[in-house]
Amino acid sequence: MLTLLAAVVATLAIQASAACTRESLKALTDAYLAAQTAGLSTFAANATYTENRKKLSIGSSILSKPLKVDHSRSQHDVPQCAAFSELIVTNAASPYVIATQLRVDNATNSVSQIDSIVTTKNDWLFNVTGTYYWASQEKWDPIPVGKRDTREAIKAAGDAYCDIFADAKVKVPWGTPCARLEGGAYTGKGQASDKCDVGIPAGVKLVNRQYVIDEEYGTVDIIMDFNGTPGDVGAKGLPDSHEFRLEGGKLSDAPFTVWCQDR
Image (tube, rainbow, N blue to C red; front, side, top):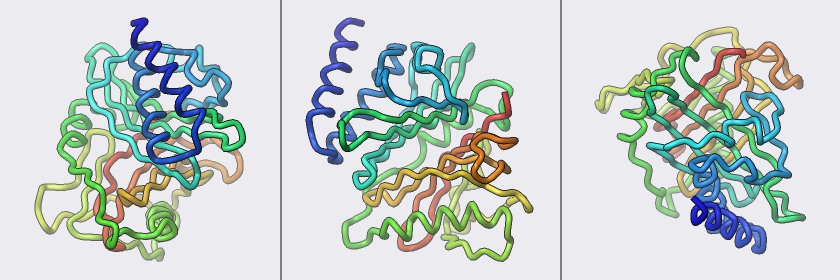
Protein backbone atom coordinates (compact mmCIF):
# COMPACT_ATOMS: atom_id res chain seq x y z
CA MET A 1 0.00 0.00 0.00
CA LEU A 2 2.80 2.45 0.87
CA THR A 3 4.43 1.79 -2.50
CA LEU A 4 1.17 2.55 -4.29
CA LEU A 5 0.61 5.76 -2.34
CA ALA A 6 4.18 6.87 -3.01
CA ALA A 7 3.68 6.23 -6.72
CA VAL A 8 0.52 8.34 -6.72
CA VAL A 9 2.25 11.23 -4.98
CA ALA A 10 5.22 11.03 -7.34
CA THR A 11 2.96 10.97 -10.38
CA LEU A 12 1.08 14.02 -9.18
CA ALA A 13 4.36 15.84 -8.56
CA ILE A 14 5.50 15.10 -12.11
CA GLN A 15 2.15 16.24 -13.52
CA ALA A 16 2.15 19.44 -11.49
CA SER A 17 5.63 20.43 -12.58
CA ALA A 18 4.98 20.21 -16.31
CA ALA A 19 2.92 22.06 -18.89
CA CYS A 20 -0.37 20.42 -19.82
CA THR A 21 0.27 17.69 -22.39
CA ARG A 22 -1.40 14.43 -23.33
CA GLU A 23 1.36 12.66 -21.40
CA SER A 24 0.77 14.72 -18.25
CA LEU A 25 -2.97 14.09 -18.49
CA LYS A 26 -2.35 10.36 -18.89
CA ALA A 27 -0.21 10.50 -15.75
CA LEU A 28 -3.10 12.24 -14.02
CA THR A 29 -5.69 9.59 -14.99
CA ASP A 30 -3.24 6.86 -13.95
CA ALA A 31 -2.88 8.61 -10.60
CA TYR A 32 -6.64 8.92 -10.26
CA LEU A 33 -7.10 5.20 -10.91
CA ALA A 34 -4.40 4.38 -8.34
CA ALA A 35 -6.04 6.72 -5.83
CA GLN A 36 -9.45 5.09 -6.28
CA THR A 37 -7.90 1.65 -5.95
CA ALA A 38 -6.24 2.69 -2.69
CA GLY A 39 -9.12 4.75 -1.34
CA LEU A 40 -6.84 7.76 -1.21
CA SER A 41 -8.97 10.61 0.09
CA THR A 42 -5.95 12.95 0.01
CA PHE A 43 -5.84 12.78 -3.80
CA ALA A 44 -6.11 16.36 -5.09
CA ALA A 45 -7.26 17.39 -1.60
CA ASN A 46 -7.62 21.07 -2.57
CA ALA A 47 -9.81 20.40 -5.60
CA THR A 48 -13.51 21.20 -5.74
CA TYR A 49 -15.28 17.84 -5.74
CA THR A 50 -18.82 16.97 -6.79
CA GLU A 51 -20.49 13.56 -6.72
CA ASN A 52 -23.78 13.08 -8.53
CA ARG A 53 -23.87 16.86 -9.06
CA LYS A 54 -23.62 17.65 -5.35
CA LYS A 55 -20.59 19.19 -3.68
CA LEU A 56 -18.82 16.91 -1.19
CA SER A 57 -15.55 16.75 0.66
CA ILE A 58 -13.21 14.20 -0.91
CA GLY A 59 -12.94 12.56 2.50
CA SER A 60 -16.62 11.61 2.35
CA SER A 61 -16.63 10.72 -1.36
CA ILE A 62 -16.30 7.46 -3.27
CA LEU A 63 -12.57 8.28 -3.56
CA SER A 64 -12.14 7.52 0.13
CA LYS A 65 -13.30 3.92 -0.46
CA PRO A 66 -10.75 1.38 -1.79
CA LEU A 67 -12.17 -0.32 -4.87
CA LYS A 68 -10.93 -3.16 -7.06
CA VAL A 69 -11.47 -1.68 -10.51
CA ASP A 70 -12.14 -4.36 -13.13
CA HIS A 71 -12.34 -2.06 -16.17
CA SER A 72 -11.09 1.44 -16.82
CA ARG A 73 -10.66 3.71 -19.81
CA SER A 74 -9.64 7.35 -20.05
CA GLN A 75 -9.77 10.19 -22.59
CA HIS A 76 -7.63 13.33 -22.53
CA ASP A 77 -8.44 16.92 -23.50
CA VAL A 78 -5.23 18.95 -23.84
CA PRO A 79 -6.77 22.33 -24.84
CA GLN A 80 -8.95 22.34 -21.71
CA CYS A 81 -6.32 20.53 -19.59
CA ALA A 82 -9.01 18.06 -18.59
CA ALA A 83 -9.57 14.32 -18.64
CA PHE A 84 -12.34 11.74 -18.40
CA SER A 85 -12.22 8.27 -16.84
CA GLU A 86 -14.76 5.47 -16.69
CA LEU A 87 -14.39 2.85 -13.95
CA ILE A 88 -16.34 -0.39 -13.53
CA VAL A 89 -16.28 -2.34 -10.26
CA THR A 90 -17.97 -5.74 -10.50
CA ASN A 91 -17.78 -6.67 -6.79
CA ALA A 92 -21.18 -8.30 -6.17
CA ALA A 93 -21.50 -6.80 -2.69
CA SER A 94 -20.61 -3.24 -3.73
CA PRO A 95 -20.68 -2.80 -7.52
CA TYR A 96 -20.12 0.60 -9.10
CA VAL A 97 -20.01 2.28 -12.48
CA ILE A 98 -18.25 5.64 -12.23
CA ALA A 99 -17.74 8.43 -14.76
CA THR A 100 -15.30 11.15 -13.71
CA GLN A 101 -14.09 14.41 -15.25
CA LEU A 102 -10.87 15.93 -13.90
CA ARG A 103 -9.69 19.50 -14.55
CA VAL A 104 -6.31 21.11 -14.02
CA ASP A 105 -5.74 24.79 -13.22
CA ASN A 106 -3.23 26.08 -15.78
CA ALA A 107 -2.00 28.77 -13.39
CA THR A 108 -1.09 26.38 -10.59
CA ASN A 109 -0.73 23.13 -12.59
CA SER A 110 -2.78 21.32 -9.95
CA VAL A 111 -6.07 19.45 -10.03
CA SER A 112 -8.74 22.07 -9.45
CA GLN A 113 -11.99 20.20 -10.05
CA ILE A 114 -13.24 16.60 -9.92
CA ASP A 115 -16.80 15.73 -10.98
CA SER A 116 -18.00 12.14 -10.63
CA ILE A 117 -21.24 10.41 -11.54
CA VAL A 118 -21.43 7.30 -9.35
CA THR A 119 -24.02 4.57 -9.90
CA THR A 120 -24.66 1.41 -7.93
CA LYS A 121 -27.42 -1.02 -6.97
CA ASN A 122 -30.99 0.25 -7.42
CA ASP A 123 -29.98 3.07 -9.77
CA TRP A 124 -31.74 3.40 -13.11
CA LEU A 125 -31.02 0.40 -15.40
CA PHE A 126 -28.01 -0.47 -13.24
CA ASN A 127 -26.56 -3.82 -14.31
CA VAL A 128 -22.84 -4.01 -13.71
CA THR A 129 -22.54 -7.44 -15.35
CA GLY A 130 -23.98 -6.18 -18.61
CA THR A 131 -22.07 -2.90 -18.43
CA TYR A 132 -18.77 -4.68 -17.87
CA TYR A 133 -19.42 -7.20 -20.62
CA TRP A 134 -20.31 -4.68 -23.31
CA ALA A 135 -17.78 -2.03 -22.28
CA SER A 136 -14.95 -4.56 -22.35
CA GLN A 137 -16.00 -5.66 -25.85
CA GLU A 138 -15.73 -2.21 -27.37
CA LYS A 139 -12.80 -1.35 -29.58
CA TRP A 140 -11.13 1.95 -28.74
CA ASP A 141 -8.36 2.90 -31.14
CA PRO A 142 -6.95 6.32 -32.03
CA ILE A 143 -8.40 7.74 -35.24
CA PRO A 144 -5.74 8.29 -37.96
CA VAL A 145 -4.59 11.92 -38.06
CA GLY A 146 -6.02 12.71 -41.48
CA LYS A 147 -9.44 11.31 -40.58
CA ARG A 148 -10.01 13.05 -37.25
CA ASP A 149 -12.95 15.37 -36.75
CA THR A 150 -12.47 18.81 -35.23
CA ARG A 151 -13.23 19.60 -31.61
CA GLU A 152 -16.11 21.73 -32.79
CA ALA A 153 -17.63 18.90 -34.83
CA ILE A 154 -17.27 16.39 -31.98
CA LYS A 155 -18.90 18.76 -29.49
CA ALA A 156 -21.68 19.65 -31.95
CA ALA A 157 -22.50 15.97 -32.51
CA GLY A 158 -22.76 15.35 -28.77
CA ASP A 159 -24.91 18.44 -28.33
CA ALA A 160 -27.19 17.40 -31.19
CA TYR A 161 -27.84 14.06 -29.51
CA CYS A 162 -28.61 15.82 -26.23
CA ASP A 163 -30.82 18.42 -27.94
CA ILE A 164 -33.00 15.89 -29.74
CA PHE A 165 -34.42 14.77 -26.40
CA ALA A 166 -36.21 18.13 -26.19
CA ASP A 167 -36.66 18.85 -29.91
CA ALA A 168 -37.33 15.99 -32.32
CA LYS A 169 -36.48 18.26 -35.27
CA VAL A 170 -32.79 18.44 -34.35
CA LYS A 171 -30.55 16.79 -36.92
CA VAL A 172 -28.18 14.29 -35.33
CA PRO A 173 -25.27 12.93 -37.43
CA TRP A 174 -26.24 9.30 -36.90
CA GLY A 175 -23.78 6.75 -38.20
CA THR A 176 -24.32 3.10 -39.09
CA PRO A 177 -23.39 0.84 -37.44
CA CYS A 178 -23.87 2.58 -34.10
CA ALA A 179 -24.61 1.17 -30.64
CA ARG A 180 -25.74 2.63 -27.32
CA LEU A 181 -24.89 1.32 -23.87
CA GLU A 182 -27.22 2.52 -21.12
CA GLY A 183 -26.72 0.90 -17.76
CA GLY A 184 -26.38 -2.74 -18.78
CA ALA A 185 -28.69 -2.39 -21.80
CA TYR A 186 -27.05 -2.48 -25.25
CA THR A 187 -28.76 -1.53 -28.49
CA GLY A 188 -26.26 -3.19 -30.81
CA LYS A 189 -26.34 -6.75 -32.16
CA GLY A 190 -22.96 -6.71 -33.86
CA GLN A 191 -24.59 -6.09 -37.23
CA ALA A 192 -23.84 -3.52 -39.92
CA SER A 193 -27.39 -2.22 -39.55
CA ASP A 194 -27.09 -1.38 -35.83
CA LYS A 195 -28.56 2.04 -35.03
CA CYS A 196 -28.49 4.48 -32.13
CA ASP A 197 -31.64 6.44 -33.00
CA VAL A 198 -33.95 4.14 -31.05
CA GLY A 199 -35.82 4.59 -27.79
CA ILE A 200 -35.21 8.34 -27.49
CA PRO A 201 -37.66 10.05 -25.11
CA ALA A 202 -39.38 13.33 -25.96
CA GLY A 203 -39.78 16.61 -24.11
CA VAL A 204 -36.71 16.14 -21.90
CA LYS A 205 -34.07 18.83 -21.46
CA LEU A 206 -30.43 17.85 -20.92
CA VAL A 207 -28.89 20.96 -19.37
CA ASN A 208 -25.90 22.38 -17.46
CA ARG A 209 -23.45 20.54 -19.70
CA GLN A 210 -19.71 20.30 -19.18
CA TYR A 211 -17.39 18.65 -21.68
CA VAL A 212 -14.18 16.68 -22.07
CA ILE A 213 -13.18 16.32 -25.75
CA ASP A 214 -10.45 14.07 -27.16
CA GLU A 215 -9.90 14.59 -30.89
CA GLU A 216 -7.40 11.73 -31.13
CA TYR A 217 -10.17 9.28 -30.24
CA GLY A 218 -13.11 11.32 -31.55
CA THR A 219 -14.78 11.37 -28.15
CA VAL A 220 -16.71 13.79 -26.00
CA ASP A 221 -17.98 13.10 -22.51
CA ILE A 222 -20.78 15.37 -21.30
CA ILE A 223 -21.79 15.54 -17.65
CA MET A 224 -25.20 17.18 -17.29
CA ASP A 225 -28.58 17.22 -15.56
CA PHE A 226 -31.18 15.01 -17.21
CA ASN A 227 -34.41 17.03 -17.25
CA GLY A 228 -32.88 19.55 -14.86
CA THR A 229 -33.25 23.30 -14.54
CA PRO A 230 -30.95 25.39 -16.78
CA GLY A 231 -28.37 27.25 -14.73
CA ASP A 232 -29.27 25.47 -11.50
CA VAL A 233 -26.99 22.45 -11.37
CA GLY A 234 -28.67 19.36 -9.98
CA ALA A 235 -32.07 21.06 -9.59
CA LYS A 236 -34.79 18.41 -10.03
CA GLY A 237 -32.66 16.57 -12.59
CA LEU A 238 -30.93 13.21 -12.67
CA PRO A 239 -27.12 13.31 -12.64
CA ASP A 240 -26.05 12.07 -16.06
CA SER A 241 -22.94 11.33 -18.09
CA HIS A 242 -23.04 10.59 -21.83
CA GLU A 243 -19.97 9.82 -23.90
CA PHE A 244 -19.92 9.75 -27.70
CA ARG A 245 -17.47 8.75 -30.40
CA LEU A 246 -17.52 10.52 -33.77
CA GLU A 247 -15.90 8.93 -36.83
CA GLY A 248 -15.95 10.63 -40.22
CA GLY A 249 -18.53 13.13 -39.02
CA LYS A 250 -20.93 10.38 -37.87
CA LEU A 251 -21.73 9.05 -34.42
CA SER A 252 -20.44 5.50 -34.26
CA ASP A 253 -21.09 4.85 -30.59
CA ALA A 254 -22.73 6.28 -27.53
CA PRO A 255 -20.66 3.81 -25.59
CA PHE A 256 -20.91 4.73 -21.97
CA THR A 257 -23.95 6.25 -20.36
CA VAL A 258 -24.51 6.24 -16.64
CA TRP A 259 -27.56 7.57 -14.91
CA CYS A 260 -28.26 7.98 -11.24
CA GLN A 261 -31.54 8.30 -9.41
CA ASP A 262 -31.94 11.28 -7.10
CA ARG A 263 -30.54 10.53 -3.67
